[in-house]
Length: 386
Image 1 (cartoon, one colour):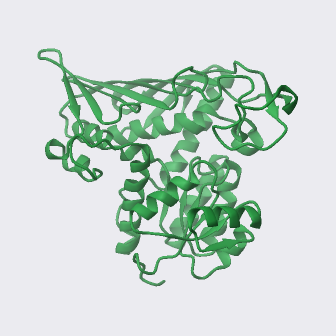
Image 2: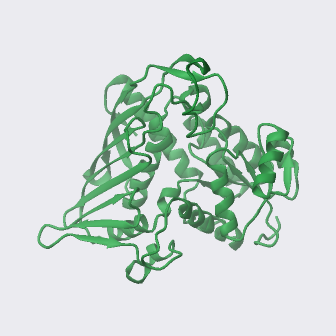
């Protein structure tokens, strides 16, 4: 296997809907440029390649994998394609960065973990929320013991893009997105974040689901994510919905730590709000993804603090994912930049026995196991052990 660096690495991407361009931009900001692009059709691939300045447009995903110049594949395709696409890439000897969820079930995700290990290939799952500077700061405060023994982890991930019965996306169809929707799509980010920050695994879950729109109006013409608000009534057809609009999940963690998460995609005004609060025996921490450059630190015996993103006063972990000085805000696109910076630094270093400092297929598999337990709990109305 050739030694890779910025001058010779060949990167291909599959899928350029909502999230694919975020990968393209983040890589460019790291001095790494996409070599080729695969889409559902050659025509669409050519159109997107021209739009984003990508040199090669392939007639199929298989054609991209057959290109010997491609070393790394980014998967930003619909959920049902993640497993076959990731498996094919690994079998072709390509390193893989995959959107979450990693697969459609835990047997598939386990297979990918084992295959990547067998092939000795770099693998990552795009849990980009970890890379907000104040999330890293929160992690360092928790891991150092500064907030004391952990008691309660609570929070939510709320959106409104599926508020209306006429709102539609492929994620609403189980055969494309999986049996879980809100939990797998956004709840998995929160669950990953809490384990990443605290280092604690979940031991059991109890979940409650609700589908507020059992029948939705499906557009009769294709749409991309977060679009479709200007169609007329005759452009829709009734479609039964079998995935959750809402979930609340009680969580038991290791060491007696308890938690609760609410996830919903029908909360008017909440565009993309992930938030958590961590309560310890000394202090508490709270972070809101819609105000990502602030970290609230709560105390009992002295005034509370509001820490603003400023690398001059942050921990080394926080500083590592900051690109600009205090007062210069960093947000969602920057998390992709920082995650891909870590992945490619690891790839270029070439020591794949070293523990990665980014989320891998193993993290993606763990989230699949959690999601399946949450689904069983909601169905059976009981606690389910992990």
